[in-house]
Amino acid sequence: NNNNNNNNNGNNNNNNNVQYSVGPYCADSGKSIKLGVFSDETCQTKASDEIFASAYGITLPYSESTIIDGGCVSCKQQDDDNNNNNNNGNNNNGNNAEVSESCEALYMDSGKCEENVSVISYPNTQACTYMHSVLPSFEQLEANGYVHKSGKTAQVFAWVWFISTCGLAYYIYDLTNNSSKTVELSKQEGGNIA
Image (spheres, rainbow, N blue to C red):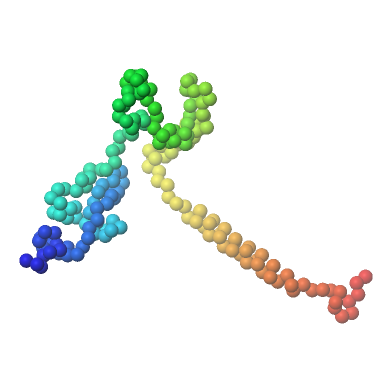
């Protein structure tokens, strides 16, 4: 039966010469990422996940559940040597845990309101106003059902600015190229300068 060489182990499912790709995609809720089967290599055209099951005999992992765990990520530095050296013989059982570089970088770049923290010598209070007044305002707007829409007014102002800038650029160009058309009054016939 040589007619079925390219269609999934002899099953005639009209997928001759189609190469499928597996890739991540945002689920309809927008809050999870799942794996799916796609009929193109750029993962734009979704195909049935059953194709994976028929080809490999198992269901596609993360096709029903999200790839990303919604929980917290530990900032504790993981030891590369699995504590084989027992922390240089100190046997402190991890009491001196270190913060991972990624968490430390996130903390350094984040806005902070450390105004009531007594263990910090120089508290950073730069984001306190934002956290105490602006964020609650946004939360209240969202709770009342406000949805931000892009305004037509901003678009009109942008177009007016663009057109006026182009007009000004043309005017300057015209002035600089027509500067040779000056009138010399002293060279005119019968003209006397007093």
